[in-house]
Length: 226
Image (cartoon, rainbow, N blue to C red):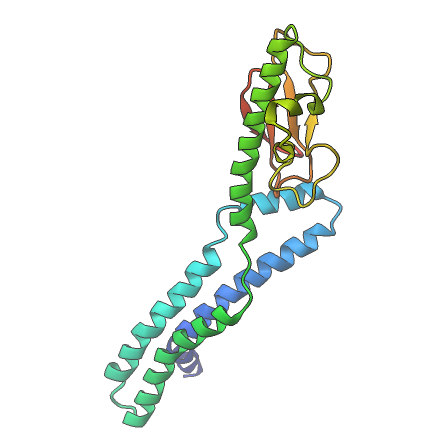
């Protein structure tokens, strides 16, 4: 009897339970990342961030499911629970009808900021674009200097009309030094065997991820820590 009453309560308030799960998932993600930030094993933190990259919409999907269930439950409770008093059925139906409306209103009142995972995705696209432009500048310099690459990235700034933004990764929290990229081309030539020409600094991106520009002008992805 107790099991049946418990099951009845679970089913009766299912939209609310699902809504709570959406918040629970979000809180668990935030607390896990916060805890791993202070752990000594950075690889574990980076791998965790990577594992949820592109799956950040999961709490939103669960939240949407709870709103849909709320409307369905509104009709089910009113039309199927005829043994209940009419006033009770009306109260339950109105409660489930107002629940998603009130929740949407409250959520819209909360301060919003771009989701960090989605923001990182766009930053990676911008970073790749910057690296491709740097690749073009390095190739032009080598063409003008007997196939030798410059000693540093500063030497190709003239090819970009003084635009310094290209030397910085859009994903980096703050600009450090003359560039957000580590350069390895000093003393090297275009004709040398393929080698890493430049790569992201460790702090540029979220997750266990970085871009590498090879001397054959190919941009590849790699892990910060293998």
